[in-house]
Image (cartoon, rainbow over all chains, first blue to last red; front, side):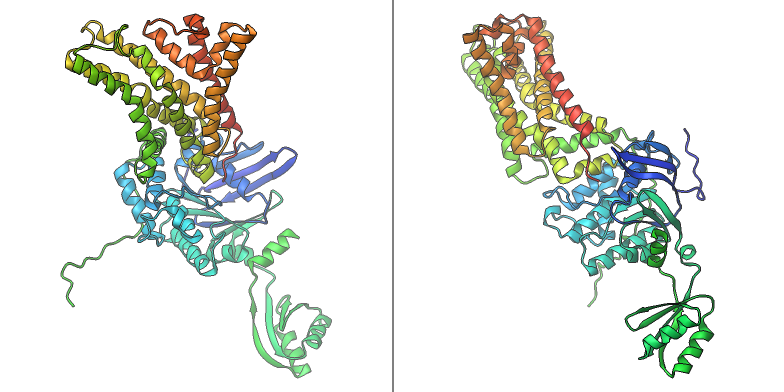
Length: 306
Length: 292
């Protein structure tokens, strides 16, 4: 089958994909389209993220349904698909005594880059991920964060069309995590490589992704660009000096949906500004903060999961 | 401070628009990497010691034979000489088996233990191509033991003017190549089969030694004391390999039960061992889940 691929065509398309492990259903009729840019694959552990990545790589056979990755069916053209994909696995194990540059060079050659060019690109990729000075160190002497970077360098050095990263911030401290997220975002925007990031950290996905696919129990429960997903059901966020309980009761009496989290009050509903102003004034409370409440990915996720 | 030699290098990410090799090259890439790894190339000196020692042992009979031949001015590989080509594998058989016990686990176990298998299979390889690359690498390295020394010997004799006649040389070289390849494939297949069952190199190495020793000992006891048929001696991996060499070079069969087995059955025995090793390897990798 000749691939039909245009810039507008989805990078990944799955239709009715079912994958079972014995009696356990890992993917249950999954329908999903992943477009260009950085896409987050969200879901709790066991939601089917890693299984979906395995199917995208053609490493496992689906039981039902159809799938295309970069215009090919990974089940029948797995080698052609994988040649154009960079993959960063979840596990941190890498050959301990091999120098980072040798490992990245070898994996770059594996993807068809001639040896001389592979040496150059491996070195460049390691510089890109911030390991230029460390590139001759054996991988076994590196920290978890550095190994994650080595995996990322391996994934991008052969100039893939698509990069799949499975939990790329796993095991990183907050500073390393920030660096890694910035790096992934940069690869997806400046380098022009499409990226699918599997994660169960909502905040990470929200920070770096253009679009999100949310999986739950093997099904796609929500997908779209971040701006699409955040639309609707906005409201207000306010802090007041004392009198929280009274204010919440008053607003609820006015028919608004109100949540109290610590000292912060979330008010949902269509244009609640007047009602909030009147309630605060009537109760004589000091208003410390009043701002529009943005719908977060967590809200989307919780709604979708519910 | 003036830095007249200072330059700014752009290390920004660049797309690659140069030539790309087709996916089948990945087999060669993995095979070459495995050969380098097994021989300790691009690794510290301690990783080079064992392969160097094994290869030295394999060449030792050839070197001794050559030295004596030069001193005595006589080809010592003839039937009445010090060592024949058929005998050669008897002298180095143990070293070949031990080398296989090191090479095959080094080639296979490490990838599963370190997660490299997952990275390979996420690239333009499938299990079949991966195993083809590894088998090719192991056979190639084993040929350093099984093929290179006799070839060196015949070449050295030819250079010294002690070798076979020009008419006999092609036939001899052909026999050396067939024997070397067959024995390399035999030990590679068995070694890979054992290595495919564990991620621990040490366990695979010990298991290989046991597979070389135990069936042969059991078969010998059964034949000598239990009256079992001579064909049971084909269970002796080392014995069947050295016997094959004798038969290929047309030399007298060895003494003992395996010497009484027909040449056809010896060939079948070698083929069966090789096929068994290959089948175990393939079946093991069919069910192994690469860590993603």
